[in-house]
Image (cartoon, rainbow, N blue to C red; front, side):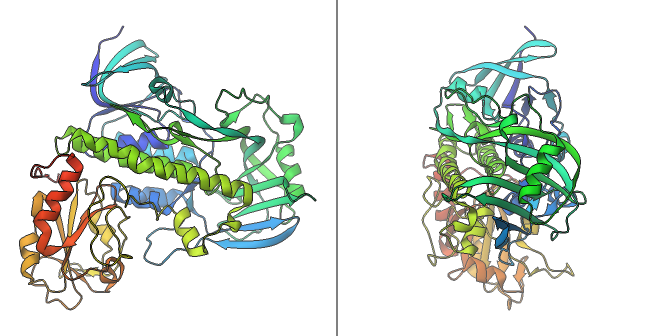
Length: 542
């Protein structure tokens, strides 16, 4: 047995979710080890859709520019049934949302995140598998098996980002209820020479006399001229043996690899216009399940991403939901390890994220079986939900008392971006997200029409929080602040007089209150984080 090592957090699985957990922990000063049983990243374009909310998270981390340089836009989807176009969905969002929908192969997402964590002196330990673990009141003892033999690791926490067949989930004894779809699919990365509009995906299907879909083709654009990830029903000759009902049937499987001719045959039947495929990088057969755990953790051990929830890839919700799992958990672990919150804070991970997972599983199953175009929501709500901009925790244990109009952003909601903030020094306007970028702690945002407001001056620096002050567009700006020159902050946040906002590290609103009650509100917010009622600790922004 190799020499013991100690770390704050051990992360099993170095896909996008595990890498996101490592990124969030490391930039908050938490030590971690990130292990993955695979010897190298897989060169497969599996999860390719990147949602606007994920881009906002990467913006806060300071790496979104790298992603934007590598990704392609997802502008919409063309829907064809039995050879006719029946719908054209444009992925439009309100103008204040800073990012649109994007597509990026999973191996590129992993490369970018891996390079980011390397900048924090953290490398992925490839070819190293988590074999087993035990936990006690003070930490977790994990057994790893790598190229240099067995190793025992002591960590304060363990996060299982190890996929649908998660060792961590099984070790915790979590249930994983659900079932597999009977259909099998082919997946391929190919080039099509058609002239469809740039940035649009295709969903083409054939409906039989009984109204059911008996043939299907889905194409998602990828970086590269004419390149798409295509998925389709598998022909009988390539069908794999049905999985044992006791096992999780999800992801790439089977020893039969589709040929380009297999993909071409489906395209010939269903594509909206004739095209010749070429340049196939890879292809595989895969199956889909939908399942979710009964809880997202136990004690000092947690699961995230596919280890916690799996579902159809419709709407590209899976990877993005997992990344949000990781970010939600990481900032809470960081606060607990720094002594700035009680361990009770970690119970809020399950309370906030499992309802999100349940909603995503249910919605993606509905969209996979009925089609997104048949969703009951109006188009604006549908787009916001698919973009994951409606994810919120108003009913969660950390949500403090609401304040102001009911339809204004309230505790638990996503913090909206807004443009048109100006300062006396900068010669260009800023967005609020520009101001919040790279901040790792809680942020106190104060708003008043006039910079001379007494409550505004007294509230600055409350609770030791990093403070961002915004004043109305007509303020003389006689205090260090950002002027709401475009009026967007007032329009989107709808302050009810001088108002304060605590922004959580994950970009959700922690508290909202009148400035005259800042001290009480901030104290109550930190009491909610700690699960006890002493005065809040002073948070020191790095």
